Image (cartoon, rainbow, N blue to C red):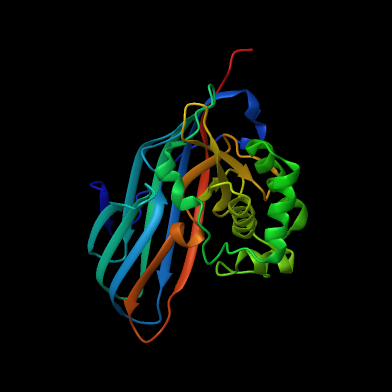
Length: 304
C-alpha cells in the first residue's frame, strides 16, 4: 500500500455517521460506509524484530462492494511495510518494525460503497471453489455434525433450501455468549458446549455444509451496530451459467447477510483471516487493545 505512513500522532478524519437503525435495508439501492480500525499493542519493556500481519482491508471489488479509499498508519514506531494478496484474494498488510520502546499502534480507515439493486454476488469458478470443499482442523465434523449434514441433505434436495436449513439448524442449536469458547475452539467442541460467538456459529455451519456436499467459506467483516468484528458464511451454490455464486448466510442472527454487512476477507476458517497476528523478540508478552468505529455516510433508496 503506497499510502501507508509512520506518524508521531494519529491523523483521523472527523466523520458524521447515519444511524443504521433508521435504515430500511430491503429498500436501499446504494450505500456508503466509513470504517476505522485501531490495534494498539503495549509491552512491559522494549521489544525487537516485530513482524505484524493485518487482514483489515477488503479487496478492491467484492460482489457489489467496492473499496473507494484506504489510509493506514503506524504510531509509536518506524519501520517498513508491504502488502500481498493471499490465495483467496485477500489483501494482507505486513509490517516490520526493528524496535518498539513501549507501544505501537496500527490504524486503518476505509471508505466503501455497496449497491443493493440488482444484487451482485461474488462468482467463483469450480477451481476457485475447490478449497472450500475440504474440512479444516476447526471444521472437522464429529458424529453429531455428520448426522446433521446427512439428515438435512436428505430432507432438502435443493442446494439453496439446504443452505437455508443449515443456517436455521445452527441458530437453533447454539446460544450466543462470551467466555465459553476461544478462537481455537473447533466446531464440534462449540456445538457440544452449546454456546459461543459468531466464529463458532460460522465454523459449525461450515462443517455441516461441507459434510453435506456444499462448498462454503468463512467471511470476516463487520456488521453495523456491533462493536467488534463479525463472522458469517458464504455458501457456494451452483450458478445457472456454470461455476458458483457465493450466497451469504449469518447463522448467528438467523438471516441472509444484507447491506448492513461489510466484507473484509474470506477463507476456509478463522485462521485464514485472523485480523491481526505477529511475532517479536522479547522475554514477555504484550497486551492488545482493539477498537472500531463503523457506520453509514450515505444511503440512497430505490424508487418505489
